[in-house]
Image (cartoon, rainbow, N blue to C red; front, side, top):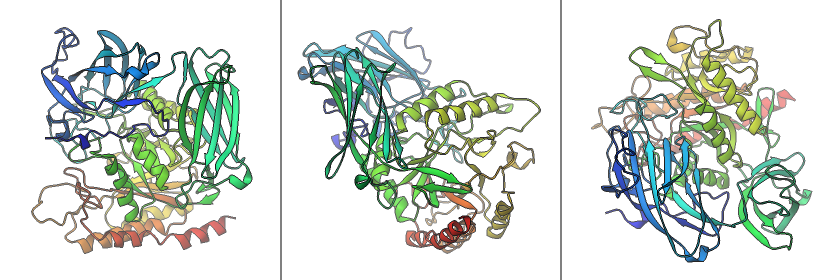
Length: 605
């Protein structure tokens, strides 16, 4: 029996909070539609045959179903009661994430369509007229044999190597929110400007904005810090405001001091009354590049990152609890890492909230795994416009989080460069441009590993899972003379990247050392030859990591990976997050950069 503590009751969007909301997690009617013929059979018009516990996907154990076969389409249904206290207000229905292609009906009327398994979709239910019932029906299509952004979800029935159990349908919180009938605030874009000691805020407003004003108030523990106000109808969709932080109240966000300002946004009528109000927060920090250095708040910061794929044995892509999200950050920090590549998954917003308040650096990434599809004819790469549109939704959702220090829209794209511009070039360039236009405050890596195609990209990287320490060190020694190790197409020697142009460089995947101390676990997978003992693991980890730590031309690295994931037995921790090795020793190895970094920074001046 699954108890109420498993329903993920916490507020799902902690960076844009309203007091009037209601979680719809819990038991819903549910039915699998294997032939995707549900509309023809009237599934949107009748009760469904089974039930599921949201927000967990049907493949997970926590959902109460645990069916891991291909699920081409699934249906959900629930009748809800709108709170009487919301009478006269507009009601918004939010789905934090539905994988992959969703259609939503309310009381038999289609209210929304959405493609993309990682970002929210919102439906306007209109005005609440008292104690009302609404019937919600959702169809989620998720054909995993079609080319689409899927991250590490397996193409095949079974898991293999680094492909894992699929996630279909609703996998994050479903909830209601009440807003003003006439107009309401939408989520702002908050851009910090540390050199100027200011925040720039783009505040959209939806509805009738005539005569309305937007007021933004910044606060810290001592009270109000700054205030700004602008006409809500002064721009096409809302207002642009600047908050100037007095010098005595400026406090930069950093891992050592993850200070967050509180932010209150109000929509004000002509008579001075507040029509709508939401609470947020912001971190005042800067990320910049100085030759091969990546600077945080004007100072070099070596990024000791770990690959975090965000899978859970019982919830798959959905954390079993909010505490589990925070735990992964604390486990990573205990092992000596100061951040993570959030790998091939757009993490729940509450993970980013914990990263913001704990001072944990993260790279935002898309779950595309290289825009690639393995077919019977080999490797087929045919990404479409949906990659760019979905990535823009991710940027819009996550741009305000100070913990995000870089963007990486693509991962391990693999295609030889030929004497023509191909579709991969277009998609890579399009996703880079979308990122740069939406956010000018963070560096952008066009594609992690393999096919770099954007000359303007701020960062360059490579992946190297070599396990021989000395050979690994020699491969990366060329960075000192501008010839870093660059991946080729699976060892074939084909050129698939533009030349390195002196950007900040890091090895964004390395290690992956295959180790499990349990002798009863003979099966599994990892990179290279499985080590025979923990001591062998520790020596190899130290050797590989020191080769990167001691290279003053690198700004960081990313070790694979934080935890084991199903058959992949190369985590610092087990899949259940329990310890499997001496974490303090791993932590100690990674603290050897400080003196090297100081010497390198001095030499650059």
